[in-house]
Amino acid sequence: MGSWKFEILSQEVRSRRLILEGHIFPPYPRPYYDPMFFYLVLGPDYLSLEVSRDFDGDNFLSYLARLWGPPEEGPRIQVGGRQDEEEGALQLVEYQFMPDLRPEMLRRLAALLGQPLPGAATDSPSPMEEA
Image 1 (cartoon, rainbow, N blue to C red):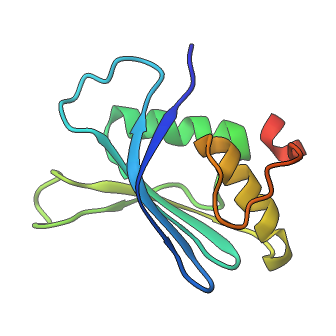
Image 2: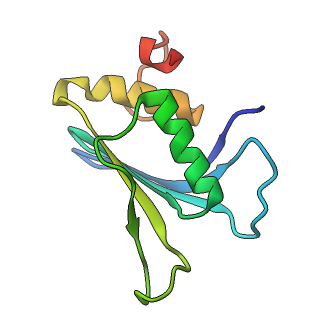
């Protein structure tokens, strides 16, 4: 099986947050017409990730849990638009970490995305990336 690929469409660097938006491409043919969306915020002591609520979103969150460990709470469902429709619904997971581990989380995120991120050192692999 191949690897998950990422396309960053928007990147915003703030003093205490890194905000990324884009698409995720699974390592298999996606049966849906719409691309798989992600919205990620890396704060001083948390990483918040929203992904499409569909089969591929479930698969990606399972992959991420195997790679980084499960988040403290299971995915929450974020519904946009009317509450009686699931169209456009997203799954939200959050990872909490100690503020001094933010550089490590940034390195792990850069390794996952397969591209450098502002403030992420790329010279040495992290032991957490090898999970």
